Image: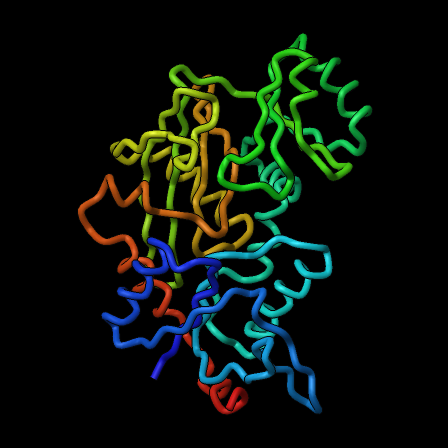
Length: 303
C-alpha cells in the first residue's frame, strides 16, 4: 500500500485538502515538519529518522509543503533529507534541486535569462552602501523593487521610488536583490498553476488584483478567473521546463505587451485559485503526483 509523507509546518487548509485527496485514493498519510527529521548513515544504508531516534518506515511518496528556514547548516540538512528520499527513487514533489533553484531568486533570474525568458532587470548586490549607490544611479531611469532573496508570501517587499525608500528595507544579510519595477494599472499579475508528469498535465490561470504594488493573496490581493491566455500559458510552461519542475506556480506580469516572469514558486499555494474553480484542484494534483513511478524496494530498506 502506498504511504505518503506530507512535509508541512502546520496542518492548515492545504494539508487537509491533500490528506482528503490521498485518502480518497486509499493512500495512507503521515505528516512531519522537516525540523523533526534527521539522517542516520549506518553501514551501507542511509535512513531518515525522527529526532527521537524512531525510524521513518514504509514511505513510498513525499509531498513537500514547507521548507523551514534557519542557519545554513539547517537548510542544507533539510534539503539533504529530500536527497536521501530521492536517492532511493522515492516519488518526491518537488525535488531538492527544484526547491534549491526556486527558493534562490537570483538563481531563478539567471536561469530564466539564460533560457531567453523575459524577467525584470535584476541586480544582486553585496553590501548596503553599495546597493544604495546603485539604487541612486538607477532611479532616474525607473522605479525599483526590493525582495528578500529567500522570501515568500510577499513579506518585506519594498517599492523604491526615492533613495529614502531604500532605508525602509529590513535586511539582516549582506545581499540585496532588487529589480526594475514593472508597473501595471490597476496593480495585477497572472498566476499560472502547473502540475505535470510524463503522461498528464494540469494548467490553471488566474489574475490577482491589489490595491498596493504587492499582488500576493496573503497581502489582500483579489483572485479573478480569466480565460486561458495562450501566450501566458506558453510562457509559464517554458519557465517551468527551464528547471524541469513538475509542480509550481509561475507569476507573470504583462508589461508593454510582453510577458515577464516575476517568480517561480516550487511550493505553490492554490487556495486562492480554488475560489475561481468548481473542480477540486487538490484531486487533480494528486492524480498527477501518484501517476509517477515508485521504487517499492525502498520499503524494505526503511523497515
